Figure 1 (cartoon, rainbow, N blue to C red):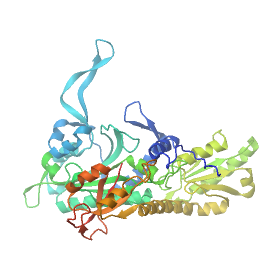
Figure 2 (cartoon, one colour; figure 1 turned 180 degrees about the vertical axis):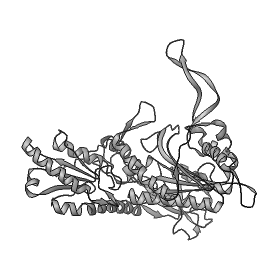
Figure 3 (cartoon, rainbow, N blue to C red; figure 1 turned 30 degrees about the vertical axis):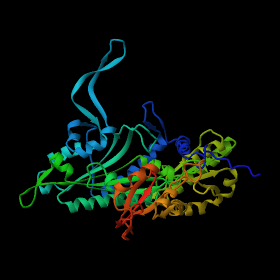
Figure 4 (spheres, helix red, strand yellow; figure 1 turned 90 degrees about the vertical axis):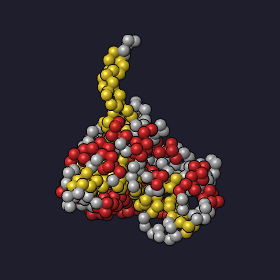
Length: 504
């Protein structure tokens, strides 16, 4: 009987997917739980990844005419009360500040003192506080459009948390724009979901589907919400970015008005859009394997790590000289117009320990240089995505390294796309729908379903079935979705399909 393969991560994806996810984060040195319940400490490797994402997205935002600014963390409660649907949507998640100082308590320790005149909400999202500011900035049609993004943290008081996917505090960007017309605001809403889709597919190597949220799934207070939806390896959906057409709802609540070219006073049209550190969770669940994190090269903080291997000082001197010159040659190469990011790990650790450190962190390419490589003017090269290894002449490595990284980026995307295609199905009956979302085995409750494409007429007709199966409508796809049909539950005429899935 063949021995079971050994893996760096225990349990494996097949054995316990949720626990595997947590162990990949731990082994990859990405983050750890915080003393504050529901919060996390993002460690240097995890934060370097977030910075890679920030840089790419920030360039894309600025290329589309946006500027960065910063707005307050605290929001007066009265601001949220002005938009009824908005406050109702976020009320249960709000953290509230009611006092402004501490004082010694009678039994020792400290207690809150100095109650505030008005409670302050710790930012769950910033439409209201930014809207109040825009109301002061906007007077005339000449002041429009305003297109601003902020990088910030937000707090949503989640009861069930999971690192990167759902935490009480997380990092994100939120764009907020103001326009003179509905058409211009809607164009902005669509343009930004396109930016997110491009980032997801070209940088994260994660295929996504763009679509409309149904009324029950829309952002509170929005007229329309667009999202990008991705399939994780356990076949669940993850909402990876949203862009909201807010109409005039928030401008009326916050009194954002301008004088148009005819001299009439008009309410402005606004949008908001955002992605967060949950994208790191998306990367983990899209690409990683039973040996740990797998990083797409375009986002990897280090795309290549070189491990010098030697037994004595004489070997060390010669090998490090070789490694340093090789590093310079590799850094002179480019991928997608950027110099390659190369690190040398010369820590005093056993070779196997160093190797697995970088495997578990997902570094795309590992290069090992020992005495024999030096003699042959070569290098031992290992790919993280496939595990393939080979010895390559140094000159060949330098010439081919960028193509190798591009091939990895493309291969990761294709692998994720193949998974989605294999587990997407058009469904026309309730029985087939129920079977699709029923676990294949009681021992593996995570393995079932995927993306079900179904016609539906009225969201309310589906609620009982969706609640029973813990399935949600992810989106109504924008592309290739113009074939009418009949609702799979009621048989009523339905103009388009929606994607149904279990989700994070």
